Image (cartoon, rainbow, N blue to C red; front, side):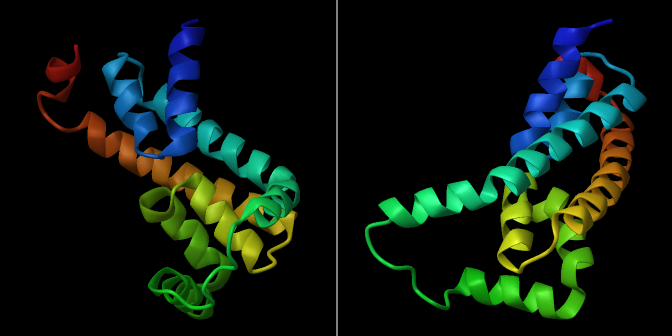
Length: 147
């Protein structure tokens, strides 16, 4: 078992979701292995942020030099997503736009319960891992570039 390759895909997808499929194809893993470890990588960061979120938020507030602006372009966009689609919208956009960490922080800021957060992120992460991995593996010549 190529454990180091699996860990590489897992770590790549904890920060930026698309990193998992790209790393998997570069390391020569099967699409299924890549999709599984991409999902696990996203869920690793979701779990860490969800359970360490309160402590991180308190630490951030303690050392923040000035209070944040109430409404910026980014906060307005987040509120619009929340009002239109709720947790499902956040989960849907997390792998594509928000990153696993960003999507989790956004959901927590709206008061989503951990159980619901984990379920929605797992479903979204699994679907997008399969879709992105299969799409990347279908690009002709991509394995030649990395291999």
